[in-house]
Length: 261
Image (cartoon, rainbow, N blue to C red; front, side, top):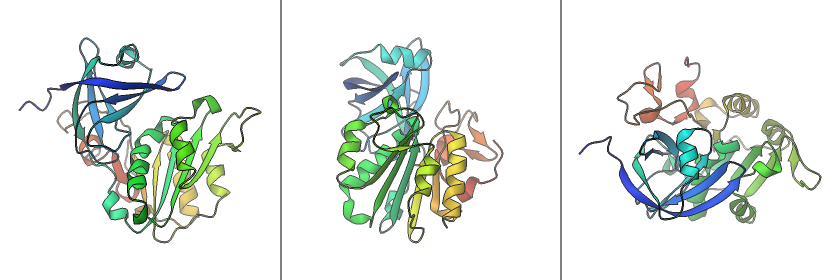
């Protein structure tokens, strides 16, 4: 079986999440773990890795920002159109190891997408975790992703939102996500934190978590380093001896801290 050959699957749902960002549901059955990714292929446009932001064996969902030729072509597709998919790949979040622990999920911008798969998993297994704490940061209220999900999560979990540039009608916090974290009392004992977003955000969130008493072993980061083949053959995503596509994209922070990128 050719590991580079995609399987064509239909688009069953398209939702506009924010300006330039759409959510696609694909009829692609797989036993994926939260935090894994797939390679998405369109003829004449190439292939790109995309994080799975759902938790289901019946379909996968992808959050797609329109930023290049491939994603522009994806944004032009309609329900029932077909795209090529291979995967899932990579090491996801070890959610089974998180049982019995307080969860902190901290995401910025489209970095919220991989964390969504963990939150959906937690929704199905609420008794596994003493508390579920969600911190989400965006540029403006228009950029907030998964609004319907957030409204539902607010009835079940502790959810905190912040934007850099609020409007007059914005009722949540203002400022960078570290400010949001600093306003809350964080439980560092028997806890894990998952962080995904721009590199500069990850850097300062980890600093804030360390100051709150979190050890590096309690922190997991999702890295979106440029990946190509998805199976550790091309070497394009290597960080020293680690492959982001195989050893990650989810890493426990102490295993990659200080590694050269």
